[in-house]
Image (cartoon, rainbow, N blue to C red; front, side, top):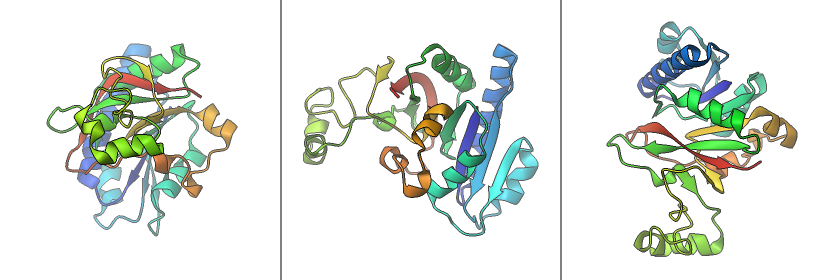
Length: 228
């Protein structure tokens, strides 16, 4: 598996993220006896000394330092071109993982061959569920319901709350239209097959959910999958 993280001036958030990644790798090693995880951090010309600070703390991480800010999509694509893992995990730098994250998600992907990608149930820094964990395709009707307040008034309605797919349980595995880019695991073969290029803003721009960094995400392992 290849973990890809894009950083820009958030070295302390990224430090905590990488600490949790290291623990997840360790737990997976204990559970499966395997440690075939590579971690890529692409730094978009940060001015806070991110690379110098983090390289000493995390020698297992492979860093790519850009002389200019390449933007989120291009930076992901830089690491994707070098990644060798069977699965690609796109991970935001302000995300903290539970120790069983990799073990649970890889087990799901290995036993569910028709799943092209998966996301997870996310919670914010106060422990509240983040409804951005799963999303419906933003058609005109779905977008209207969201902007008009119908989604907020009927949060569990299949008709009015499809923007966040509120009719689907947060505690069960479900197929969804859109996953959050904060934690998105994709089969590398799927990316290769469809020749996805993030340099053209790919679907990543569509599925990325922007949540302010001060509300750091913690990830639980309820899994939402998207079919290939």
